Image (cartoon, rainbow, N blue to C red; front, side, top):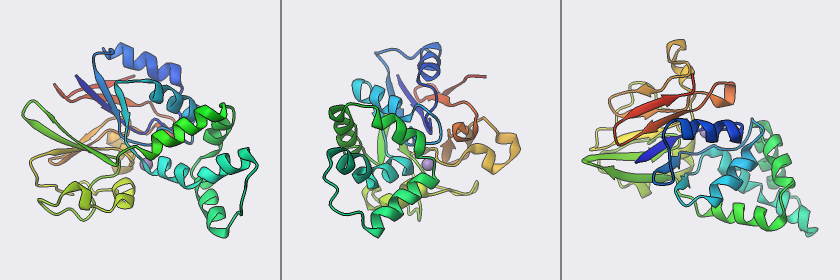
Length: 232
Ligand SMILES: [Mn+2]
């Protein structure tokens, strides 16, 4: 079966693995994480390390992974002693990432052997912005932020990648295609206290970012039977 989750934001790895197991996830299942496994919390680098070792787990890009990739120079060139130049553009990228909770991720990454760091960076460079999956007779589009400037029938590869990971749909945003969009990025409490820690299901999309970045726990959604799993 296919499970999805989003926005782990450095959630403690052992707690995350225990939650997966408790929800019935086994090596026969597949897990798609819809972006933002790093930053804010302590275990972002450990989660990345874990993901690259799994055959049945796929990470889609979130805005935080994109910010990390833009700062590749910070832990590659410096580590290697080959810093060519820190341009003002690089400084801006670093400042932006730092502002968004990069510190624990950088600390974790700096402890890894260089070879593993390289593997993680190469893995992230190969990640997709979205996944279009069919389960039974239902179609799902998995994407971190949503579908900005939605137009019916517009191929997914025609959307601006940057906006796919930064978009925040309003509750009444409608995607009138033959699919349900599963997204994260905007903690559900952002839409009102009554959604705090729970997923939001609209006619067109389901938001599964339960707010780990703000001290809450992640959730899992199993697409085959639409069963939702919560820690509490
Ligand atoms: Mn995000």
